[in-house]
Length: 247
Image (cartoon, rainbow, N blue to C red):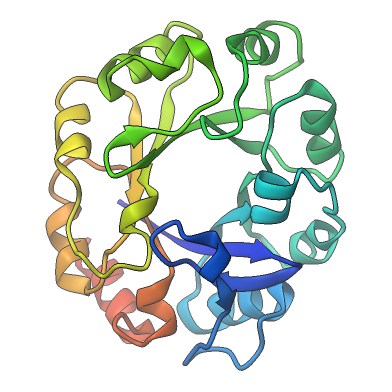
C-alpha cells in the first residue's frame, strides 16, 4: 500500500485542511517545515520521508476557477517524483494546460465535474496512452459533491460503476468532513466499495497514526492520503521507514 502526502494549495500557499471548511484553511504550521511554500514543503517530504509520490489539491483552481499552475514547473524539477493533481478539471482546455507541464496523473473530482461528456472525451478523444485518469469521488458526510446531474442521485457504489464503464480503474474516495479531523480509520463507504470493485481505491481523511496505516494496509486499499499527521508529528519519518521495512 502506498502512502501519499497531501499538499493543499490555497492563495498559492500550502494550507491545513479542516473538515472541508475551506474558509478556515490557513497556511500550515508544521513540525517538518517552517514554510508554507509548496516547493519547500514538497522538498522536505522528499528529504525527511523519502516520498516519491504526491497528491496536490489546487484549491485556487477548484474553488476559484483560477489557472495559475506555474508552481508545477519548480515542483517537477525535484528529481524523480510523481504528481497526482486535482486542478478543478471541468474542461478539455484545462486538461491540456495541465498536461503541458508534464503531468500524467490527472485527478478529476466529482466536485467540479459538470458533465460525463468530459470523461467520454478524455477516454476517447485525447491521446491518453500516457495519461492516467483518477476519479476523485468527493463527499461531505457521506453525500456526493457534484455539479453533474448524472451522478447526483446515485449511491457511491453506483458512481464508481458508472465511471468504470468508461474504463476508469483508479478512484479516490474522499469525505471532506473527515479531512484534518483525526477521526481515524476508514469510512464504512470505503469498506463497502473495496468489496464491490477490482479498481484501485485510494482514500484519506483523519488517518492519524502509523498503527492505523498498518490496519488499513490489510483491507485491500491501494493507497492512503495523509497530511495533518505528518505536520503535527503524529506520524514521523521513522514511523514511515519502519512501516516500509515491514512490507
